[in-house]
Length: 149
Image 1: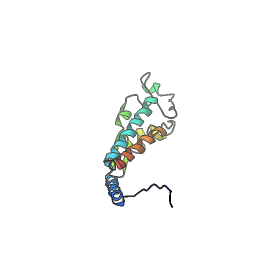
Image 2 (image 1 turned 30 degrees about the vertical axis):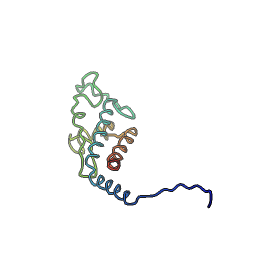
Image 3 (image 1 turned 180 degrees about the horizontal axis):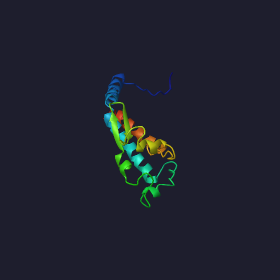
Image 4 (image 1 turned 45 degrees about the horizontal axis):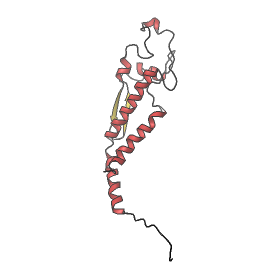
């Protein structure tokens, strides 16, 4: 076709295969990424404590002060023991947990997370919607970071 103009795009399949192999190697070792995600979630949980509940404020207990609570203490932070016990923990190469080691299913931590009897649920272990972009960025940076080298 005389006079037509074309743009030629060539695809380098060999280079693309090398890039995909790098991404696959990154995906096989997710531990660094999971550690970063654990820190992101841990920071979010600490913000939950500082705000005394997010996105909704936690309910106060009517009888807390009678049981020895310090005047002016934030909800779930009377002694700071539970807040101070929150830790991230990487599980193999496939997950991360953020939580407290304060007992089993009937523990102090579980009681306040899920509620029990007259104690309302005050979910302190909660990822907020605003945290997901940062978590997604951590995964993308881990996988795609090797492609940029």
